[in-house]
Length: 149
Image (cartoon, rainbow, N blue to C red; front, side, top):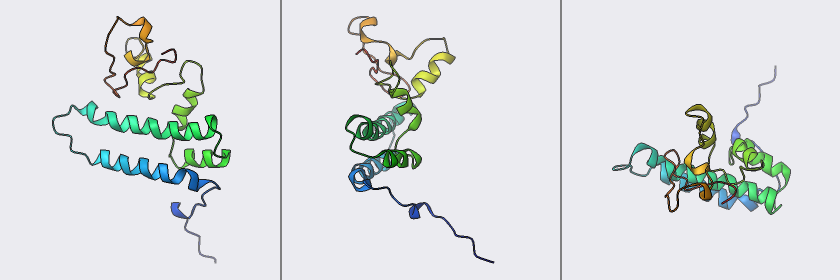
């Protein structure tokens, strides 16, 4: 009988236009590794994760903008990036919905309904907060991601 072919992730053919996004994506990956290896003495556990959440957001936003806003990448390449986890498909799905265009992370909306039926502080429009109130989400460090801001 024939030997089964072993598929490696590296053998997956990159879609056309990959070279457009490869540089920035590799840069994001490098920054992510640096963050994951950064010393965390003196920081509270959630604060260690904030830059990681932020970078995750930025990388997804980059792919989102390249496809939806700038139209510089093909649907095939966009879907490849989602499949290979270069962008967060669930987060992007929220950005396409009215009211969630600037959403920071999925935790800030999933936790909202569970706890006290309230929205995360970062989801509250700045106009609805006490004047000069400093917003900083405890989960991801977001300083406000309401669509109306």
